[in-house]
Amino acid sequence: MSGQITPHSALPHRVPDLGAMVLLLAVARRGSLGRAARDVGISQPAASGRIRSMERQLGVALLDRSPRGSRLTDAGVLVTDWARRVVEAAEAFDVGAQALRDRRDSRLRVAASMTIAEYLLPGWLIALRAERPGTAVSLLAGNSAAVALRLLAGEADLGFVEGLSIPEGLDGTVIAHDRLVVVVAPSHPWARRATLTPGELAGAPLILREHGSGTRQVLDAALAVHGGLARPLLELSSTTAVKGAAESGAGPCVLSELALGEELSARRLVKVPVAGVRLRRQLRAVWPAGHRPTGPARDLLSLTARAPGGTPGRPGPER
Image (cartoon, rainbow, N blue to C red; front, side, top):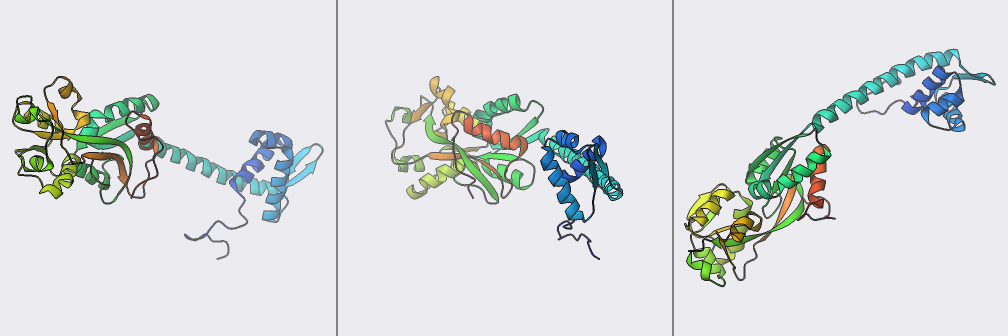
């Protein structure tokens, strides 16, 4: 059938654009091309040219022009009625799309690995609240592997991880850098050591975060060439629990420097340097591959670049 729109076709070439239809409705309402042009914010010559183009496109005259104004032709009356229905449908479409945006922007689900959730996100979320006071934020804290799973399951809009690389199925960008440090209680023999060798660190029973955490991934990789980690003394699923065990004198632990400021200042824990091992890592924002953050998730991502410890001017998404 001629002119029929199929799922894979463009609009028929004789259908005017929405702006031309809005102008025609203004002419019908105001009875003057000049007044209609002012209503839609264009010059009278531009309005006249747009109407003439519309007439050529449709193959019919739409206006009778005279010094007293512009009057719709019979064809113009009919086309104006059709145009009104199209414009009303477009306005309803826009209202519906805005409602979807408002619903999306009314909430933000963030998943973050433990160190970022405890020591960086609170400041970012306070800044986000100043920009978007109407957005309700929920935070799901877990290890980096759990963050990836939540994003892939559609349970979070934006994630933050601490591992060596971007988890499979996600895109991401570096937002900050971090360093892992070895700490012990002041009573531990290592507290009096100037440095440790990588072999000593690898061979000692440590208080560690669980498998799947970014901290554990970095430590495993750093010590792999030195024989790998010995059997852990304890494996704990939170940074606070690891610090508490180390403070009690149970043994050494390896944690983010971000998480140890208070304990080191109060000398409840003592830093022990390790020679010849790189324990730096990149902190990343991540999201499902091919779906760049929008709305409040995009705004939070932007805030991380402006906050202390962020990475301004960072490149586009990593893969």
